[in-house]
Image (cartoon, rainbow, N blue to C red; front, top):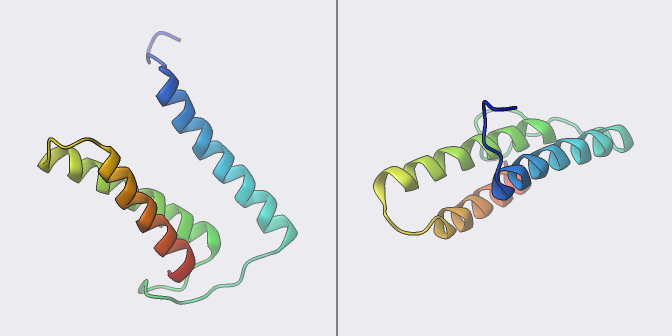
Length: 90
């Protein structure tokens, strides 16, 4: 596979995403989710909120990279807060 250079952080990132998706699939099988409406303008399931949280986290990191020269640890902290908010209150 020469089209992409895999570093340890890249591999851990994709492994983390895979583990989240696998655990959500198991959780859905054991306890099916119901739609609910939180602060998001649409009714969502658990998986929808995970997707919205991941997409928002990607945008947070891109905006952080584009507007700041500060370390990405700050973007990670903001992204974690975003994910927790979307998953619990979305």
